[in-house]
Amino acid sequence: MNTIIKLAFTAAVLLTIAYKFDFGAALQLLATVPVGALFVCLLLLLLQAWLAAARLARIVSLFGHRLGLAASYRLTLQGMFFNQAFISFLGGDAFRIWRIHRSRVSLADAASAVVLDRVVGFAVNHAALVAMLPWVLGGINNNAIALGLVALAVGGLAGIVLLLLLGVPGTRLALVNRLPAPWRTSRAALLSIEMATIGRHVLEARRRLSAIAALSALVALVNCLVFFAILRGLDVAFPLALACALLVPGIMEIALLPLSIAGWGLREGAALVGFAALGLGSEIALAASVAFGALGLAVGLLGGIAWLFDDHGRAAASPATAGAMQPAASRAWPRSESRSRG
Image (tube, rainbow, N blue to C red; front, side, top):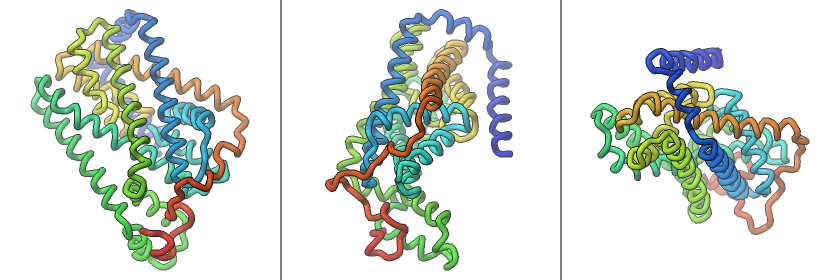
């Protein structure tokens, strides 16, 4: 039922956009984008997948396992395919958890690694949004949209702070002790607490997360560059294309809401509203967003092909070397403060 609702929501948003705006004109505009520009954008998205794969490999190492870069890149591309095939990013994340877990990694570690990967990516993307907001707000001609962006920035910061507070040492054990006695042996309940307190890894591994955050910043930058390249290919003036590119982190956050298929509809609606507030025509904004989504779909299809020919083996990840950081939190379900460290 949930899937049907989200399919209906996606269709409703896209149909509304097609009704209110000239979808045909947007598609005609797409035909004017130079092939070379689209090829560069495709290469940028493949590079982005490599950066995301490097980030995932580093995060898996935090849990005492080694995920080779080639295996991580293959897994990332395949996850992008499942992002397109299922509801939002949840399908791809579930696939990545399953594949890492099959590689002799505990479910707790696999799920924690993928969730932490998603959390760090979101936090850095949001930091980019906050950093770019002063420049973006100066060019927005709609007060309601400006206030909406400020609300998005403040809400995201509040969520990140809450996540870090839940990760304070001792919180996880306190939550476990508050569970009814029968639930303390429930893997589902303990896994839920494991995910809710994922912020502890950010607090415990600050130095190692700096390199991971840098990779995430490059991932966010690629999204901006791809939109910028598409807009320039549509003959949008450099200053306006740059202003729209600075707004992309906010658009991507809205597209991540698990309300539609692979962000379709949400991304287009956000681009239409946000870019229009900067002075960009609606057809061009729609064309740029559709082009971005189509390029992402192309990369996802490459991941689908890789998945079809994958041996689906169990050797993607292996135990890390002795020097790897192995948080006590990931080794076993919490039973005492000394073992879990919160």
